[in-house]
Amino acid sequence: FKQLAPESADAGLAANNLGLVLLEQDRLDEAEVHLTRGLEIFSKAVPGGLNESVCRMNLGRDARGEGRNADAGIWLRDALAIQEQVVPMTLHVAATLGELAALHRAEGALPLALDECRRAVAAVEAQLGLLGGGFGAAEKFKSRYVDLYRNLAELELEMGRPEAALHA
Image (cartoon, rainbow, N blue to C red):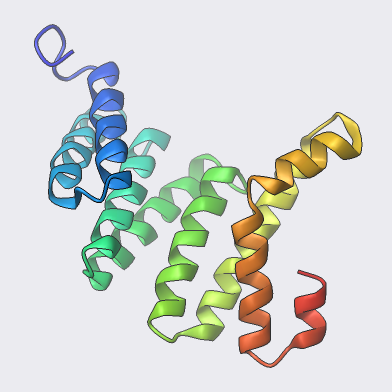
């Protein structure tokens, strides 16, 4: 893609995907290069689109991994603003809110983290409501987001709300 169509959506997806792989390998400096390239492509091709928001979320994860929390917050809030416009109450929104909640929890901003985590779980639940297939399918779906539910329960406990933690 780099040679045939360097500004194409496929090149943007390839850059973002490579950035994600590098992010998972904790090769943060390299990840940032590719995620930034993906963002550049998508910002030009479809400004304010879903793929741009995904690149912004991933850049937020990268910044957080590098300890640049202020930058992470900016990237994640920008991603969320786009997602709430183009794909509200979806798993993209849930993922970004989960990242923001983790960031704010680490910074000690527990009320804000709790609100974001509740909103993330609400987005997952909204998608769960659209899912067919009965109890088994629902449980399999929810198991993919167990970290969000666990984080919500932990935050409720940290905020002194054990009753709410039981229902998370």
